[in-house]
Length: 133
Image (cartoon, rainbow, N blue to C red; front, side, top):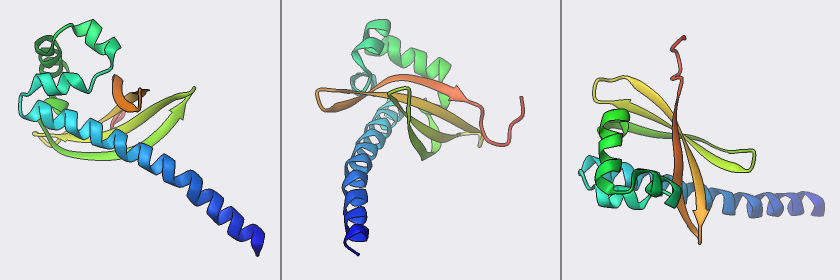
């Protein structure tokens, strides 16, 4: 019985930090998308990692890239968080986005923790469920 209680306590102890980490990641991705919806590119840019900020150099350039390259992120109709995964030591958050036309997109967000704050370091579009290549 003691082993069972220890196992439960250990699993809860390991789950709590992972769950909190996932919640923080989801909060930051959601906040960036809400900033895009409000055309607040300064705020949206603040959720990007320094690497991404160096690539785009300004919130305006970043906003233009998202509007033209990721319109489902700029104006989503629905947002759903899927798996948070560790891939080769990097955390990736899968997000399913339904755009204004009802099309489903699955995106993978690479997240980095910089001084205790989660930043978006990359986004890639994945094949959406039910769509064949």
